[in-house]
Length: 135
Image (cartoon, rainbow, N blue to C red; front, side, top):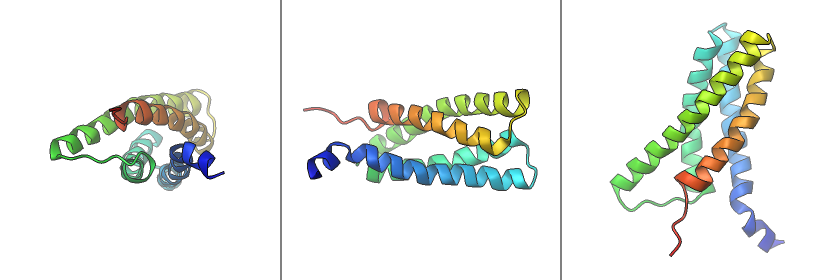
C-alpha cells in the first residue's frame, strides 16, 4: 500500500491541491459573478489568484521543486505562468462558447472548464515546468 502511495504521490497531491486551486478559482469567479461583473474579467481575476495558489502548492508539495539560484527560480516562475497563460486561452474560449454562444449557466461552464484546464495544467507542470532532471 505504501509503495502504491509513493508511486502516485505527486498525482494524489496534484488532485488535492488542484481541488484547492479550483475552489479558489470558482469561488472568486462566483463571487464576482454574483455582483454582476463581466464574466471574462471575473474569469481573468479568478485565474490570476488561482495560478498564484497553484504555483506555490505545486512547487512545494506536488512536484517538490527546488531551485539553487535566483535565476532558476525566475525561469521556473515564468515558465509556470507562461504555460498557465496558454491554458487561460483555453479557459477564455470555453467560457465564451458556454456562456455567450450557448447561454449556459456561468458557474456550470466554469466547473466544466476547470476540469479540462486542470488536466492540461498537470501535463504542462509534469512534463515541462517541474520536470526532474535524470542523472
